[in-house]
Image 1: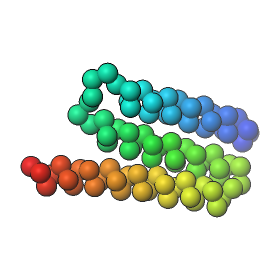
Image 2: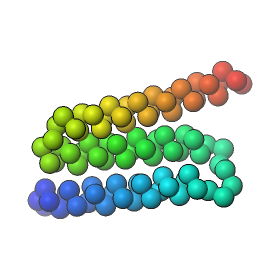
Image 3: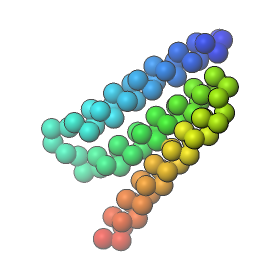
Image 4: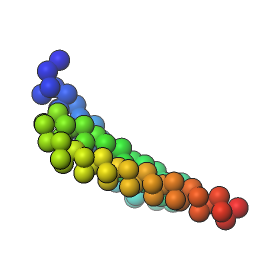
Length: 87
């Protein structure tokens, strides 16, 4: 497999992930964990973006995408901590 095929697959994965995020955010009936799903799916998208950028040799932008993913995961943990504190 060549890197162009991997890039194509990562681009497709991002499109599917972004579609899933949009679907989650437009649910007719809100789900109990909808906010968590959104944060984690957006983090996944940022990690896919980082992988894509690394394959394109753009390490600076890849690092920024990884930092966005880390921030989103941290926010998800904050939500969990808030829920635990409320119980």
